[in-house]
Length: 256
Image 1: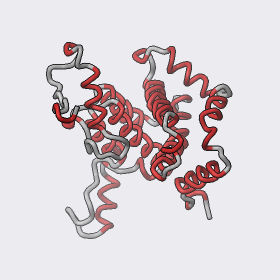
Image 2: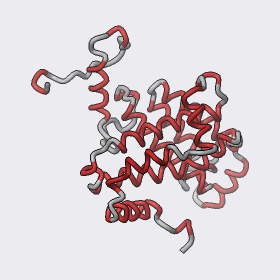
Image 3: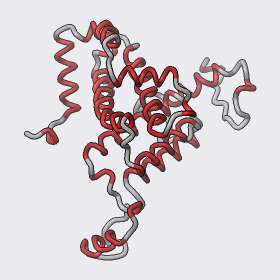
Image 4: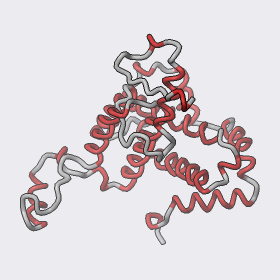
C-alpha cells in the first residue's frame, strides 16, 4: 500500500490508543514540556518571531506563518489543558488526532513561508483570509477560501454544453484564475484543508456575530455561542470597549 492510500487519521487514533495502553497518555504533559525545551532550528525561529516581531512590519509570508503558528499553539494549549478522563474518551482521542493531523499537514506550508517560496496566488489568498480573521469576518474568509481552493469555474458538466470535451476545450482558453487548479496538488490540498480547520478553531476561540460567521454554533469544534457569551460577560463591565453595533447575547435571568 502506497503512502497516499494510507489513512493517516486512523493511524493517529491507533497511535493514541497504543500510548494509552502504555500509560503514555497520562504523562503527555510532562513529555510535551520536555519536548518544548528541545526545539531547535526553524521552530525556535518561529517562536522568536511570534514573540518579538511587530506583525505589521512582517512580510506576507511571515504574517501567514506567525498567525497560523499562533492559532496552532493556542489549539495545542487548549488540548493540553483537557482532563485525562476527557482525553481518554472517543471524542477526546478524535480531537487530539485531528490536531496532530492538522499540525503535520501544515508543515509544508510553514516550510514554504520560511523560504519565501509560497506561490503568489496562494500567498495573496491566504493574506486576504488572515486579514479577515483579524477583523473576525469569517464569512468573507470562507468565501476567499472557496475561491482559492475551487476557483471561479465550479459549474458542472451540462450547464452550457453537453459533453466533457467541450468543457476541456473551454478551460484551456480561460484565464488561470478561473480554473480549479490548486487542489490538484495533494500537498497543497492537505495544508489548505488544515487552514480551514484553523479558521474553524479561530471562529470558536475569537467569536464573532452570527452574521459574520460560517455555520455558527455547529459544535464541530466547541460552542461558538458559549464563547461569544463568555466574551460579552468579560466586557460587560466596560461597555465602551465593545462596539455599539455588537449584538449583546446575554442570557436571561433564568439561565444565570
